[in-house]
Length: 295
Image (tube, rainbow, N blue to C red):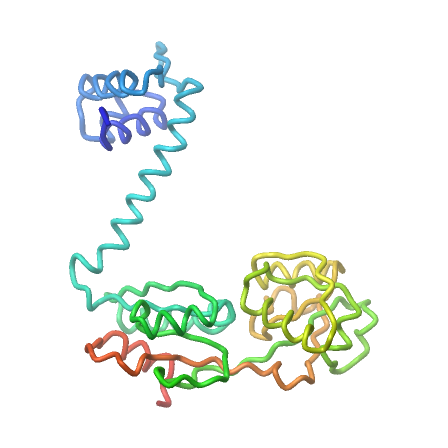
């Protein structure tokens, strides 16, 4: 390429400031140097990017396209720098955790905050994954530890008890099921559901149990969070099944909450660590001590 990152930074700064001189100051350059870089950028791309006016500069149609891509490019490079920081300074200060949506939406955020309170210099890379992906990542060493809600054991993994939670049915106050104290999942399947998006572990879990009953879920709306499920259910759009601890306090008075009688509704979250992990990882072990204080 006949242009570089500094050219893109100067272009973004000048465009956002609507002034070439102010853009140059942001990039610690003289106005003449910034102007030359903009001209070289326009020459390399074969189009005018800025229109010069008496009171400043404005992007052309081509400049607006470039601005979008330049911002995205610079943001991704900054994210790359931050993600690489633990490895370039001290790799042992990074703990990689793969966790299920269930864990991330309920107990894990407050426990990670507690961990940061004790060890503020440690970085945690937290990624949401499906259960089978979490186990494979722990075995392969791509994750220092995982958090899953599965009951099966695995010969290559040690499981530690983390938290217990329960899936509950949430319904609007005027719903036909609202007079009941508890309910079976099979009895819910006559009604329309608000669910997480396809691919979410809990959604896959519920669809599987419906199929085991020889039935199917009537999914009316799919959303990206438990909070959105609660709001839509409160509005009367359908019913939902979510972890009890994921119900937003602001929606408690707008919902009827029913226990599910099915034994699988009680979910045991567990921390999993590879048995083959020989390398010492002090910060991983400290995180485990926060998540599993009784072990």
